[in-house]
Image (cartoon, rainbow, N blue to C red; front, side):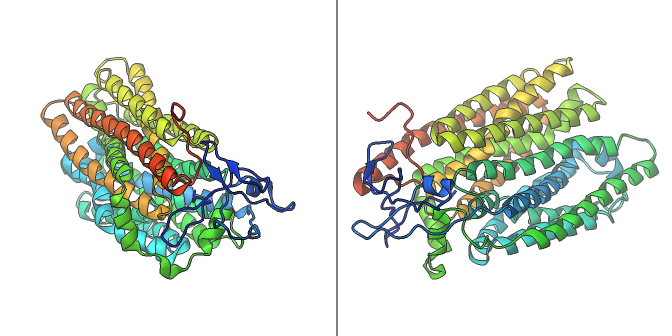
Amino acid sequence: MVSTELTHHNGLPLGKEVGGDGLASPSSDGDAVVTVCASPGTEPAVREETQAMLPGAAAAAVPDTRLYGRRFLVLAVFSLYSLVNAFQWIQYSILASIFTGFYGVSNQDIDWLSVVYMLAYIPLIFPATWLLDTRGLRLTALLGSGLNCLGAWVKCTSARPDLFPVTMLGQVVCSVAQVFILGLPSQVASVWFGPKEVSTACATAVLGNQFGVAIGFLLPPVLVPRSEDYHVTAHNISIMFYGTAAVSTLLFILTIAVFKEKPKLPPSQSQALVRGCLPEDYSYKKSIINLFKNVPFVLLLISYGIMTGSFYSVSTLLNQMITIYHEGEEVNAGRIGLTLVIAGMIGSVICGVWLDYTKTYKQTTLIVYILSFIGMLIFTFTLFLENLIIVFVTAGALGFFMTGYLPLGFEFAVEITYPESEGTSSGLLNASAQIFGILFTLAQGKLTTDYDPQAGNIFLCAWMFVGIILTGELLVTSIAQIWQDSCVCGTPLSRTPIHWPFGRQ
């Protein structure tokens, strides 16, 4: 996920390789660049990866790179504890009608068990991102997995009607753990995976989180069915809490055993260049300032926040939306949520693979955004129909595009902000998502309670339409900026060759 371009002292990329013949050759966009021939023993993935050299300098030896099998274990463990953290986020909301009766609280109180995940993220994302950039991947992963485990055990003591504050405390601990989880997919992918795997690896890491939401929709209604007997409900809730804690503990142990800071040899030449940078050259504050000066990134920051915030809001309020129109259908509400997320997981994988092979970040992002908006419209105006099968189908279509957009946002951000840190750009994207998620959840919840679910969904549709406009502006602005930079610097300021949507005019 990190570009293979080498930077000058002022941070501007100077060139990238597009061929392996050792000659100056044109890029896919017609820009002349200098290439360096790889040694015969170099792995094919490395020989094909783009690389850079200073103008006029002698060709340097290609750094040794290697792909380790351990990378799949790292990705699997991260995806699994991210899964459990996401499960703990949604496990209350999908049982809102049951937990309100058990704890004797309102729907808004249960909504806050979800909103606290978003609220905690906003003030903590900056120190968490600083920690990732300065202290490394292993410590951040251990904090995320460890706090997730601790929060799960705190919840185990809260399966009594008078202990709602304790379950809130456990949820707060899990929400802090989330801060050390959501920004890691791009970092794990770039540090451990090769140049032709990073988008797929990033999508897989995001996929783990989404799969956790899917299980959070499916299992809680099965483990905690509606019952008039308080003791039965308390027993079922305890089973869910203790099971979650046991799995979290196992994953924490695996995180300690499996996670290393980085492989002995870098997986790509770009990572070799990153390792060659002196730590004192990095300024977190300067990186933040640079990102906010990047107009395309600011547009993406807002449009990503709108899309992901809408997904958070729909996920949080799904039980309420379904049970208002279809009373007593808590289990089916969970299955509809499962359908929404499973379809989104498929969309995430397809988008990740598509980006690995095409690098068409701009066009793909806009198209998926438009299709998500259309899916939201269809879901809004079919939710009240008596036929639940239609709701299943429309929720699946909505999830396919809305959730499929998530890895697109991560990858597009890294693409347009290179050479800034992936952790910083991902952290800001997630912070934007949390802010919009809080606002949308509270506003849609109020509209749903005071009017009906359709009013709340129309509210989201209006904001998603604004997101389409911003994404279109992002497309135009980013192309114009890269065109200008390529004319000034002689090569695009991007980690990959530019893929123009309609051909360069």
